[in-house]
Image 1: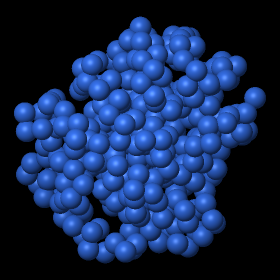
Image 2: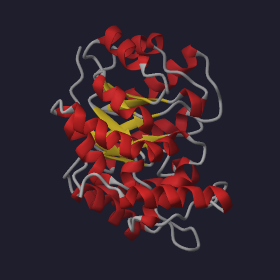
Image 3: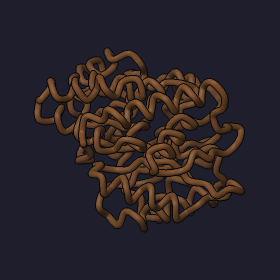
Image 4: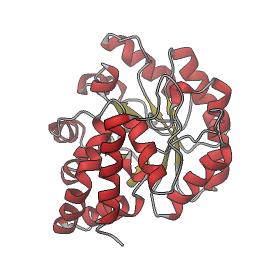
Length: 300
């Protein structure tokens, strides 16, 4: 059994935009999504970590997804995060996402509870069996304290709609281990910004990216260079990008990415609590990094 998503290239984890009262600003959210598509990305991840999935109510998530499908108009795949406290909610959202026109799901382990392997398999299987949409499993052990191991994947390989893996472990050996174990069964995506080029070199078909929201042109050109085998150009862009890409691995990645968006005129830094906008030395540090990157952009 082989995967057939056809997904490749840059899939930014798009942000959710808020009004001053922290209600969802649908118009601004759609503008962010439309701008990314116009800048050449190959797909959109909606309601991932950067989309503040777990800060939104159930109805708000569905509203954001509906609006994204409307804004994108089929130009690229719209893949929505499935990040819920329990399996029941995850199954319900997966079913609704299919009805609302999503092109795929990025499925996370259930939040908060750290499952045993058999519980993780049961959760992911239940979500997959609730929908016909293609599914990308999201492996991020540092953030969620859960590892979707090769043993877990082997128990899910019989499900034809589990077709991709977003690999966000900081150890680049995972890409080779996945491909050695499963060949072409799963489309592998790099999911951690500062291991993106390593993932592409080792066989990842694309990059689910955070900092693309602020610098989409460079992200698209980085992946395009890798896809055509121009590793000198890919390294040149990657080295310029790396100070910012490290932000994606920090605990305040959402705030830093949204601040970078704001500086680049692409969105607002507003976030919902418990997250709060950056202040003090950290804010000054990130502003300086973004301004330096903007002044030295390699792709004008």
